[in-house]
Image (cartoon, rainbow, N blue to C red; front, side, top):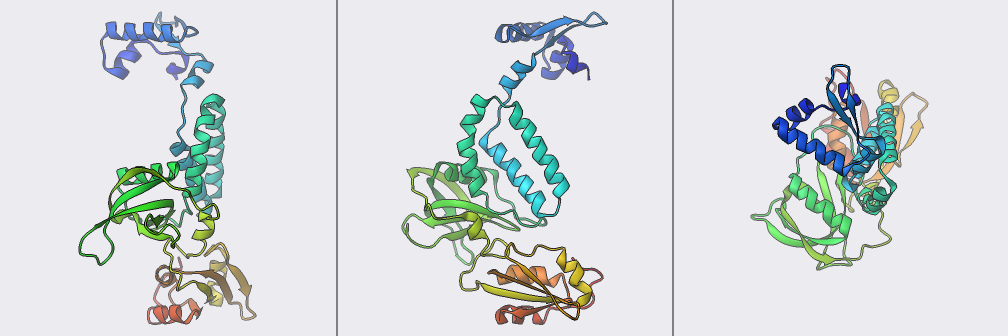
Amino acid sequence: MAHRAGVTLADVEERFEISRRTAQRMMQALEAQFPDTASGYDEQGLKRWRLQTSAVRDLLTLSPEELAALDLAIETLQRTASGLEAAELRRLKEKILALVPRSKMARVETDHEVLLEAQGLASRPGPAARIRPDIAAVISNAIKSSQRLRITYHSRGAAAPSMRVVEPYGVLIGIRRYLVARSKDDPGGPLRHFVAERIQSGELTGESFVRDPGFDLHEHARKAFGAFHNDTEFGEVVWRFTPSAADHARAFAFHPSQVLENQPDGSLIVRFCASGHLEMCWHLYMWGDQVEVLAPEALRKMVLLYRRSDFPALP
């Protein structure tokens, strides 16, 4: 509370672990840099310095990465049914934006929009694989600047990692994090999904590329149940929840395209179109024998032998 009235030399000495003389020089430099710095003596006779509000605003900075991280956190809370917390964080973001000088804000808006487009969809919380911060940073920079990325990638089942040059389009975030990219050697080819934690190194090539203007990462993400895509699996998925589990299932957003159908016997049918049968199996296992897969047949066979009746609670 005392700092709202200004800082003393003792505060500066303690904060920076410096001598009294150095603290005095710092405050002299502050007054020289900000002529409208207010100073005065408190009731104990201690001199206090305080920056005017306008000067504090000029010191406030916000990077595109920080702003995109705020938006991603808000989206994550919203998708995990934490609407109240999402609203609070959104109000905090608005307060921060109101404080940042417009001249500084203009410089981050363009990069922020690019990063936001590339964030993908935040999946449900829970265990998640870790990605090295330096790898995450270089991926972010490549997406932001539309630069080709040179990565050393260890594919599942491969004896050794290999070097590839890719054109990054975005990142899908879930239990695992996937880099959505196209090979430099196949610019018109399909987009691939690289497991981010299998990227052992990454660097910018300095080569720019032109993104496909028709690509929409959010639409691309909707093709999967989680973050994993498999075009050969994509199609209609139909689940039937028992009458005793129907109310519980209605509270879930299994997929953005889902359609709920109430049945005469009290059961609930959920339909959506997606791929990623293995990730669906992981989720369906938590429902025990309270859910039945009606389609596709391949998914029904995958879960048939693993439906249990001894779970004490639904997810």
